Length: 164
Ligand SMILES: Cc1cc2nc3c(=O)[nH]c(=O)nc-3n(C[C@H](O)[C@H](O)[C@H](O)COP(=O)(O)O)c2cc1C
Image (cartoon, rainbow, N blue to C red; front, side, top):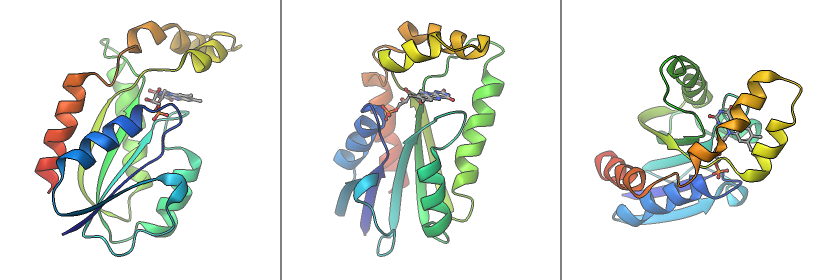
């Protein structure tokens, strides 16, 4: 069993999940940041992670998956800064749906998502936006601090075991 764990991560949250998954799986395993990835060929299982950016998968990730994911056994993992207040779940569900759609041609064997800290830099930019919704998003940065939590990392490890 040859397994790849690959991740796109700008501020380290998705990397933490990737490392937790990689630490948990057994057999022949490789961990590669997205920037070093050239192919998805040659693996029995691929854990592919990225953050939600602008309401879906980052563009680079979408382009790569479109070109390389067809027919691959893939377990997706996603981090995001979304909150769980009543009424907000529908937004998150829609964005997560777009993340899955980015890998539509893969054989999706599993999906994991959890919260990741919104960087202070990003929050500052969002708070200066002309759009009220973007400012609101920036305003919830304090509630994201400390994510992914140890509990979320443990859930990711459990996900890794289940996928294998
Ligand atoms: C430019 C930008 C856009 C983002 N857009 C969203 C979004 O639409 N929805 C969301 O829940 N989180 C959004 N986030 C928050 C990130 O998904 C979250 O902080 C994630 O854990 C970052 O992962 P990373 O540390 O691996 O880069 C955004 C962050 C940035 C910087």
